[in-house]
Amino acid sequence: MIDVVVAVDVEYESSVVAAVSSLPDAQVVRRPADEVELLALVAGGTGHVVVLSRWFPGIDADVVARMLEAGARIVGFGQDEALFARWGIVHTLAPGAAPQETGAVLRDCADAVQAPPRPTAPPVPDGPATPEGSVTAVWGTGSSPGRSTIALVTAHLLARTVGRTTLVDADTVSSSLTPALGLLDDAPQLAALCRLVVSGAAHDAPAIAERLVEVEPGFEVVTGLSRADRWPEIRAGVLADVLDRLAARAEHVIVDVSDRIDPDDPYADPHYDRHQATRAVLDRADHIVLVASADPIGLQRLVRLLESDRADRHADHLTVLVNRVRASAVGPDPETRIRSVLRRFAGVEEIVLVPDDRTTVDAAVLAGRSPLEVTRRSPLVTTLDADLLPRLPGHTARRTRTRRRPGRSRTRVAEPVRQ
Image (tube, rainbow, N blue to C red; front, side, top):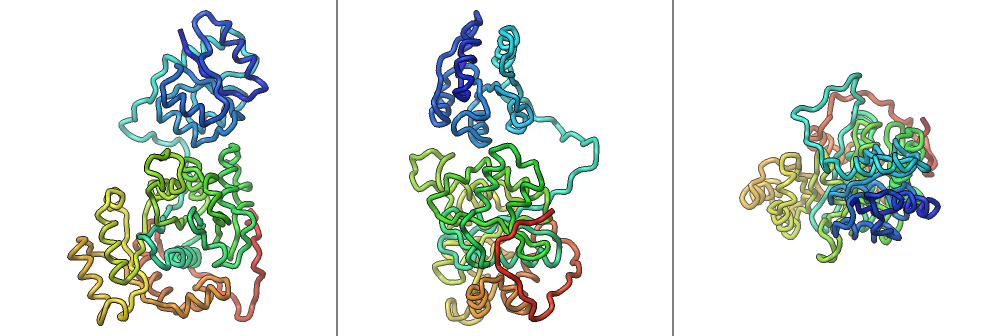
């Protein structure tokens, strides 16, 4: 007997229950009300097959990924084969299907292998591969000052010297890139992109472009959350899909994330907490820039973080950056002192040291512009250009960009990118 969990929208629930109940070898065991109850049933091992529709309350790519990870066998119900395929659902059932077809699909799904074996070698594509940009996460130790500024300047430099670059504000604790650039924060574009993925329309390139803000040609920004309490809108599985879509249209994607990675409540669902976004970005990133403060407390926090399992997991694609280097915080010859400390206590040889450039940063924040627009020759900009950019994946030969004519102004409004 096949135990079936029916999780479809109310319009079709009664017909699906009747169709399953009419089969001699299947029975309906539960009809959850929303995705929370559904995930609890899956985690408890209830049912052999879940009949799931796209419009079931709370369902999205992240929920489906968690169900599949827990070993659920899912039949997609409805005329959404393409969406189900992107979600990893193989078996589908159309509304009004005959009892024989319904039974056959349920039996095939119940007998299916939960996870197909990985191929020994990646399949060779039939046609030319779609170019994909790199994803770089800018992370930091606790209270690391200047993390968002580092992300902003790095993205702006890449846009001017390499190619199209998208800056993503994925800080779910204290988003700051939107006001730093003088943009409107009434409509967080990151949340809009997540909703686009959930709706199944993220394959539409113009729809993605409409949700990006163009700062200047080749430099686009995805604005972050206007309020920290909106973090449930940014789910880990959906955010990873958003980054994949952005990387398909840009040479570089720079993501600013919170320094926090562990759940606020150790007993909470690890798939549903404020800091799941940070973990998802770090796991997806091709490279990570770890920012720390150039003072005794900041260096101590950096050493402890580098000893953690999380940092060790990403050690092969991680660059350590110490920000606001100054003699007043660590003594004479600060560069030598910082390198000596990190070499001795963390075993780190290669680091990027960024001098304290408060004058440029203050002027940029006051004007609501990137530090690169305030002055191209500031110590902050020149150091990142010379020392950090060559360490990033996909950094190629520079290209010439037409400079803005002096005195030419522009309106700071969040205009969408046009294709």
